[in-house]
Length: 198
Image 1 (cartoon, rainbow, N blue to C red):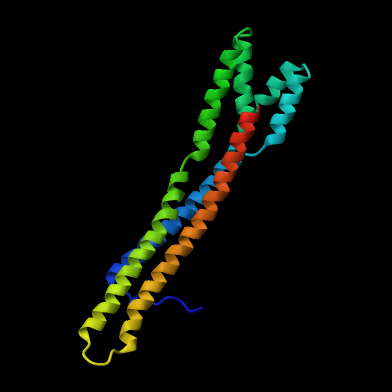
Image 2 (cartoon, rainbow, N blue to C red):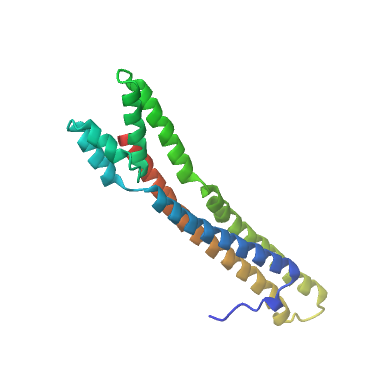
């Protein structure tokens, strides 16, 4: 596969390519940010929360509170909030539930942070590709309208090549961003389900 010769494109198409390049950079940067964030937050560390719950349910409340205070996972931080509420108001379990619910909302909001940027890339990249298609077809038809008699296929090919290239690049960027977004949304949904299970 040969490299794209950008000197063959008109300024509008170059702006479209530059914007798609920016979108792909956003998708990659958000992907790396989310990987770092999820690792730091302890997303998916279900076993730690299960150990804390087992300790609590076996009657070792102090040990469970000590384990949860490490707060190395999303579920551990939620359990720590619940345990703090139970300690603060021993007879009022609704207070502990409310603390746990508020902590869960904050954790889920953190996990969902910047996901809209990935959604924007998924939606905008094909639209920019389509815009490039329209620009390329306009270019091809303008060549066709200016020629008298036999049409030079080379003149038409430039506009069609522009149309197809921008469409392909836009779709490729959207697909990669879609897979990145789906990966993180799946992890967020899994964490939400685990939160609801406890």
